[in-house]
Image 1: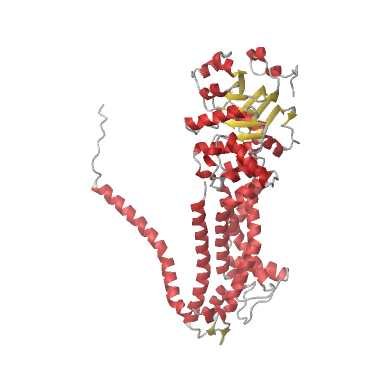
Image 2 (image 1 turned 60 degrees about the vertical axis):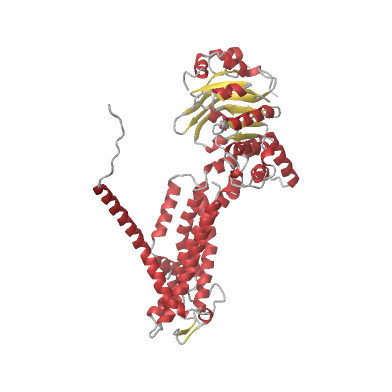
Amino acid sequence: MDKTLKLGTSSTAKRRVQRLGYGLMTLAALVTVLPIVLIVVHIYSQGLPAISWEFLTAFPSDGMRAGGILPALVGTIWLTIGTAIVSVPLGIGAAVYLAEYAADNRWTRAIRIAIINLAGIPSVVYGLFGLGLFVLFLQFGTSIIAGSLTLAIMTLPVIISTTEEALRAVPNSFRVVSISLGGTQWQTIRRIVLPQALPGMLTGVILGLERAAGETAPILFTVAAFFLPRLPSSIFDSTMALPYHLFVISTQVPGMPVKIQYGTAVVLLSFVLGMNIIATIIRSRARARRQW
Amino acid sequence: MTTAASPNTPAAGPGQMESQAPNDQFEDTKIRIQGLSVGYSDGTESLQDISLDIPANQITVLFGPSGGGKSTLLRTINRLNDLADVVSLEGRVLIDGVDVLDPKLDVIELRRRVGMVFARPVVLPMSIRQNLTYGLELSGEKDPGQFEEAVERSLKASALWEEVYDRLDDPAVSLSGGQQQRLCLARVLALEPDVILLDEPTSGLDPISTGKVESSLQKLKQEYTIVLVPHSVQQAARVADYAAFFLNGQLVEFGMGKELFVHPQDSRTEDYIEGRFG
């Protein structure tokens, strides 16, 4: 039998199909990048001229048609911190339980399904839930604490699932070695698993908080003030917040200068993109340093 | 130590074992395994009624084709099998007369006394020094002098000191595979255990690194009881003071290494040693 390998050139038709497929997929990739580029370029080109030190540090004046956005910026920072205080320990605790301790049984499967569904609930529904539970039933009133708790619940599924993923990515052989050296399960988690999973966990935490910082609907009924020309003095105060302020000045105030609207959008976008960039830096640094 | 023969110890393996029943064979029996059976949740019965005495300060080799139950036996001795899906466990494993399968036993202390080296060198993601002090830190040791002493002693005992003494704070992953495996051995030695279990510790190593590990073991047996699953029959024959041949969860034959590899009593042992199956 002749087994000589015969190699010829591939047909032009074949190559044409190859090139077409390659081209289409490149196009698909570009189309997905296009919106983010357009949004960023548009917002920044329109809004950057409005940005000044005064814009960031002054109270709104003239029915919000002039002045700055200080109370909204401070409010969003407070809400983000408040959300983090509640959701980070809770989310990480739940993820450690699911990834390290829980057996795979009906009970944990039910928890997982609940978390997945929690992630799918529309944000306005969280807002109504927060209104019912925190504002009215627990009588927190429209306040930073009610808003933070509402945002925290919304953020939990993101933090839990990314943290769990980060924990599961730590090789099991590390756990076995640690146990074989006389480590308890908790010592193993605290000394080996958590430090190794930390960058992945941080990334998830930041992405979750970033979403909380940018949401409008959950804070609409629970914390956000239409116009409140002073800074909050306690967690039971209501406050202005950037996303809601942007909504208000874009739709509710006649004769609003476009420059201020775009300027506010630039600040909100920078806040969120900045967190995103921090998450990306943490992740790539950790990847470069990783020893497994 | 348990030197007296216990008359009701079940004879290990098939008939030909009786002539050399291990019960009072050793002056100093370190580990006495009595009627041990282990079954996993997937239905496999990994060990079937194993009885075996392992002498102190000797290298005892457990060899045979894969799936024979050697690793299961190792992991039962230090209760690492607690992490696996074990559904049935019968028999006793006595170390210095204490049944380590007792549910009330302090497993953490057991694992400190019975160290384990795995087939693949798994260094923890930290420095060389931290790998060595990790076990001590877990046990609550805080004295830096103790750490210093343990690092140097364990690295010298595993023949790694000369190669790493000037870079102890480098990440352990920067070591070569052979060095990593000797670090894993040193990490166990740092805890000053009584028994060292090694599960194919040289399976991924080159011959030179393998030689270094083997010669370390020859020195270490003066202080430690060593149980080794070798990665080849040749290695088994090279290092064994005593050897046990496992086949399909049964102990086929046990005896002095020098005799067993030259004059195996059981035809299955002979076939395996001569490479007729594997």
